[in-house]
Image (cartoon, rainbow, N blue to C red; front, side, top):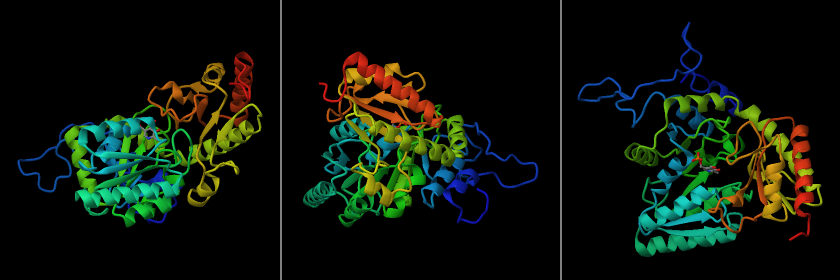
Length: 409
Ligand SMILES: Cc1ncc(COP(=O)(O)O)c(C=O)c1O
């Protein structure tokens, strides 16, 4: 990393972090390092790199930049996908322990948690993450069962806490907003580890480690990389013990990232602040215009003053993000909208420069409490009027074709 004042704003950190040393004639960007092994004798001594499944200079610039953004003093750990990062974090929960999981969260996280819980022998308590009282009651119950089974120790001591609270906020795809500071506080008081999936918010909108979270995870695939061209994940923790355990998990399971994907992610991250700024402004305008249509059943976007998560998001985030969800009367109407758009792309995923639209219940694994007619929008950076004209006419055409206006069944 270059030597510089640590007090730069995140927008500057995005651009400046992890550049090579300023030597005349040197490259301004870190190189793509392609080597699976590194020179050494039988004794590794202090050599930073030995074999590429443990660590490689191809990962270092990205890992240092992300750590700086999330306010961690030790480098992040990049993984081969967001879900690989999530699986590594969930592996910290011991047999007999408890995972407190939002009932609405990325469906891959929910599925992964259920599968792992069965194999590894821990319990999953499903909660409405926006209902602070209900989450605190689940924390109490997890702490109580940790005491009675004698599993684990307190959070912050490394890897053996008996329970973990998983926070996604805003949630995917329902856009519920958790009281992140209150929940982290309550978990810490009970010695429960806290992991936050910060994919939707990005470190530009919230930095959970500052609030006492033990771990932050990212699907780097989304906003950080930002161009829908790589699948990657990352974990950040300030706790060297936790980091070491997760590093071992990565090396032993081998869920590692390719050098070029990591290089692309850092390249994409350089423009995160301008991409997010534009996408967020577009999302606000799209959400307002959707809310003004009488035939839309519900619009969820924390930036709408009437949204249930608005006050919380305004208090704890420095922006409302660029994901919007809206609900029409039926799956048929929602599908017809996704088929009628011409500028929006009907595809899964989110966080790229291009706007995507998806009916989430088309996935059999999506929780059944997500409405059949819910469409998730990942609002991109195109001109907002073009986006609105396309979506508006697709909605009108789909409703006319399916009879799916407000009140239709
Ligand atoms: C909030 C969230 N977390 C994690 C993931 C999983 O990341 P990946 O697809 O990179 O494995 C996703 C993917 O959609 C997501 O939306």
